[in-house]
Image (tube, rainbow, N blue to C red; front, side, top):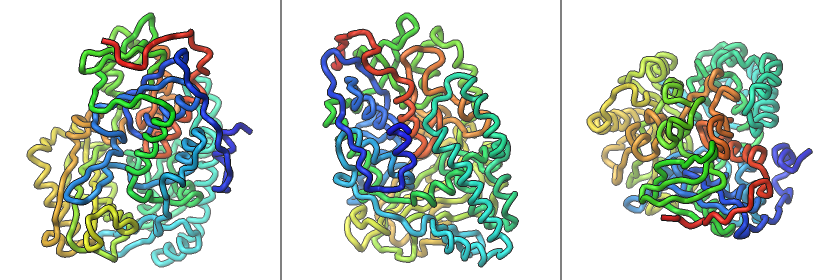
Length: 531
């Protein structure tokens, strides 16, 4: 079993797998990474630890991408991902650099994982403890307890293949896909997440509890392949965690690892084109007019945006403009960050506030591309575990997100943002945060328009390409470009998909498909920009 697989299968968090990184030299091949999101940072660390010279470039003024940090009025807000699962994927990066993640970033368990509030006011406490979960299910439907046990067994079976065996395997040729077809058929991958859950569970509320997870990675539970039910077991196996100081603490820790590796980090600079010579990526052009030569390029930018806008059309025969535009993209998000001058002690770290409709709302978002009047919300209260995210212990920090259609809806968010924010505020005041309007002290918003403008995510999709069966594994944009040699992808839009475990696993794939540095011709391509 390889060192990578030992890390995947390990259960002992104290297992020491630290290695010393291979030092880069002036002769080492130069890798340029576009985008300092979590997937880009992880890719840069892995390449740097293998002895490549690395330059990472991001148009934002800080690392993190969607996981950047907003600081406002004494509050600290994680802009994006807040649910940390499979923490060993972070630990691995530190270990590759001869370090321990725990020395830099403290992770604490979140319990319950989620509190799920139904529209009638009843609530379900979702945890990693099997006995407590069965007790919760029995409160709603005793007959579904046995069904839950069988569902969990199925989730574990899917996890063992879908995550442990295939999560870091590249699918850059059809043979890779054909080899897994029998396993996929056995796992009932043709079913949707909601369809598989419904096979075991009859109560409509428990079906919602066990099928909402695809929304965490941009998928519709009624169209996302049932492979994503592995999340249920993944959470139970490794738990749900919070990084003290926020997800931004992990991002900063990763940036610090790159400093230790001698990588060059450039922020506030945008890549406008990937240079291609003789069918190979040879560097990038910046908005300053500078060119950075490279032996290989890794794009952590949105896959659709990369092919559509960063590579000239004559270099693309597979990912043509038409094919890129015709992919199905994930929903987007409306996100409201706010702080209060009082605390809401009864509110959990992660709360899901379901609206009156489930499938109907999802149809509006994914199929009809219509901004509905009703909504379902995810409410994040980091101050439940970390008071440092607010100016004093008498304050609470929050963000709430609402799944909404991407920009094909035609919604003008410059006009719609504030009315929608007010509707979200009213919904929260009626459910989880009474008197909210009287206690607001800071506020900011992120809409689908900012997903396009800030993150260059095609159509303003929050999670890039939708994780349907026909857009998964080999059918997804490959980690190794089909059109341009020495061009690789990491992040939400490539295999295996969105979410922190997904983008970290996409970086792991590079260990398999990027040759060792000795395979590249000797080069003196400068890590500094060349005019």
